[in-house]
Image (cartoon, rainbow, N blue to C red; front, side):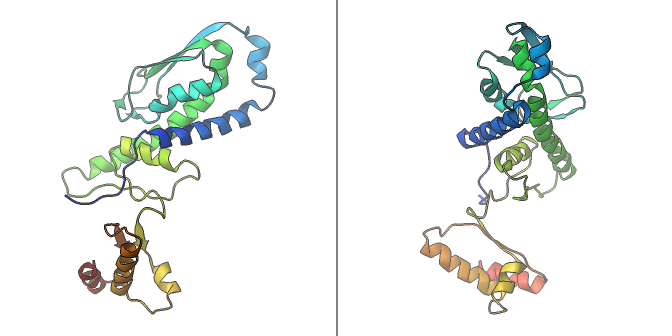
Length: 228
């Protein structure tokens, strides 16, 4: 079985990142005064309900976090899910329903839609590329070039779209680039760099750690494969 990178799921770490971002979003949107428009026009305890439906067809991502988002706003808000992450939906299809105090629904609706729209957009684009290579031995992998603070969530969205996660960060795999070799001032060939890295991983008791390297020529590829 081929070794692979750790794959992101909706776990405690992912939800923790989600909650941190939700709190930041609420703080910048509501400030100290809250939703002035809703407070002025809508009765405090007036009950309300809203449905969530995409305007375009696509792949869902982020629904798993909606209950946590609503809890951060008002624990009286209730979420009924009518779909699930990684599901393909059509335009206008109902994916969920919110019930609770109308003021609280209005206070969180834009944040909710922004989060779902961003992650579902990533999942939908990923699915496009996954389908493009269907029937081949190729796989679609993501990158750590993510939006700061959104890494686990954006990588989760890639998984919802059928893609695979590359390394989560610098800490969980080795990727030797031209920049690394440049700082070695020509003292290491790509093959030597791989062997030195393998020795280091042995020293830190990670002998099975994944090692990747960029090569410029096919002859370098043969050398690094032998060194691996």
